[in-house]
Amino acid sequence: MSEKKLTKKAKNKVIIIAVAVVFVIALVATLIGNSDKLYEMFGIEPTPDLSENTIEVHYLDVGQGDCEIIVSGEDIMLIDAGEKEYADTVITYIETLGFDTIDYVIATHPHSDHIGAMSEVIDAFTVENIIMPKLVKRNTPTTACYEDMLKSIQSSGATVYAAYPEDTYSFGEAEITILAPFVQSDELNNMSVVCKMTYGETSFLFTGDCEAKVEKQILQHNYDISANVLKVGHHGSSTSSSKEFIEAINPKYAVISCATDNSYGHPHSEVLSLFDEMEIEVLRTDKIGNIIIKSDGVNIKVEK
Image (cartoon, rainbow, N blue to C red; front, side, top):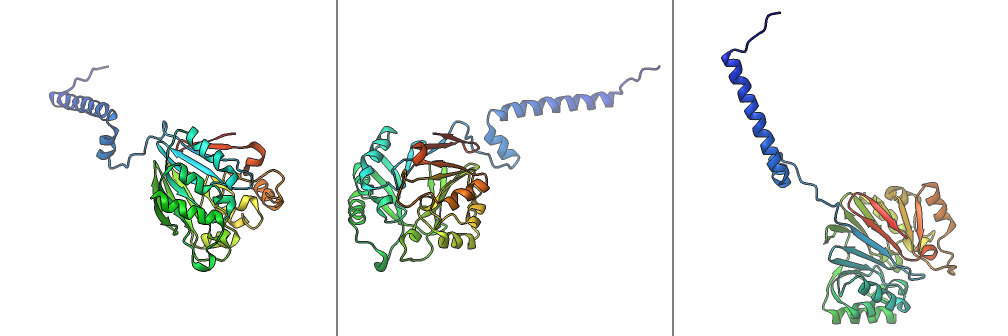
């Protein structure tokens, strides 16, 4: 068999290709060390590195009440604070986490099982921002816990925001989107601030005590309410957690905050049956105490 020899032209072509390959390899090796340039070269939006950054949501056991603490790096958010008797519990918990300043406080609505301890908590820390529903004269309560909270807010010097749907707030590496309330209601449960926290590919939904009427309004606005974790509305009452609402959220976990053997019978059997039917894992503070759920932006981890 005769052996074919490369012509001078062919040899030059091979050399050019070889040089080009070496150049590309060297370029890629350089850019790998600077991924931002690599993304810029190819017009790709870089994905944040979330592997070492986790966000934590602490669902505190405050009996027949609500209290969630969210930690994102050096930032902390408090959503509700339970009854007045739990003030020391909440304050000590935040101090144990190493914070003396609260970046955001969300007071979902002015019922004592959500804001009873809020005045003392606000007094105990430097509070930067407060989000709460805007009330009118006819639905403004005259309860001591609400009036005490307003006094503490005024003294705190915090910036106060009225909660309006579609407003967004940056919180550490996460984003908070307000979904409700929409209109004034004499039923204060339906004045609850409903919000969704998105972190990377994961999300958490907080619903206060909003009931089926508000759930329907949220659905009618076609918001993306899908979430990995749902803080169940109104302590698991059947007045909340309509099937259509839960189907739209499609959570993996449903957290219920309630007291053991409470007089309301929370959580109601209808709600638990729905979660069971949808294969949603239920986590209850009356059964397991404080619940901590962590996200690295991709994965969700539950600590009980």
